[in-house]
Length: 426
Image (tube, rainbow, N blue to C red):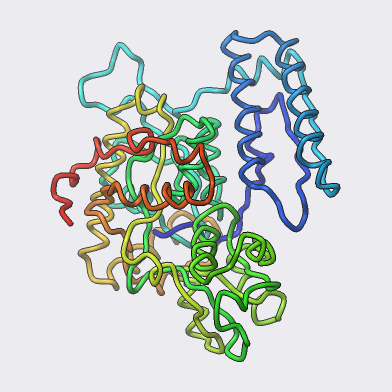
């Protein structure tokens, strides 16, 4: 019921269309995750245009080759440390198969049988977390989501990767840090947030930890050091850069702080082995780290930003337009599950989560849910508050991201489907 904190079992390549693969080799020590994700999304958008008959096979191939060549010459070759290659597999039989399996909504009712208020789509594809229970999963188990059902397609540790699968039609909904959503929307991704699903408060936050005897005491001490987090370009990186900026570091000095992406379950071990200098962990895994001792908190996102929701669940604009009743049912159910978890005794929430993990039979360790404390969501029922996006939009604007600075709030999120929106008063 918190941001993904577990190993990713599906590679990015696994979510590419069967008829077209984009292989990108990034700079090993300083990758550019946003450019990588945006290029994949643009690649798949052109493929979708081909499927709709808006592009010929020749122009599809020509466009991809031109894009790959430009990327290789303008970015990666200039760095002398990476290369981009593109392989386009265009076989008529495979293309036909791809066109035949490209629907993005699971099981649907025929248009003639639809009635006002009934869900248009009865199955929603999503990614989960190993050993964790998301609020949509809790909503389904509590019976709030029926007749809509969830279809698990794998696990992820990366919010940006999760919403990327939504933008490319491989999943129906996904969640990520609000700053990451702003970045993807500013790049042209047709997605929109509908409900908050994680945040930070006094009991539930992301902490930045060093070993007890570490000489690191301030932001300046991080120059030349390694900081490990679950993924780059998301919550942990944004918060770290804010800490460095407040600590007086220049842009050049900030570049000397090395960011390392690791599966969260391996971060504690890497810190204790001396392979990294700072470990970024949130929620349950942070609790386990602290319980074992021998570490010291340098700072936390809560200390910098206070109580607020930080991540939201998105659908594509097209899905929302074509399936408004399904989206409404999903948001209502998830909102009710959030309030159920907020108002129930902690022991009750933990027991229910353990039962869900046991029932789904994914051969995972469910013991970590015993460390669960709060929903950490500020708005009632996950209602999205404008400042929860505006904080990060202004941060991106201050950082020189002109595209993100021009994104309008109405293009980022809506509370239209949330039954608690009028009750959420600060």
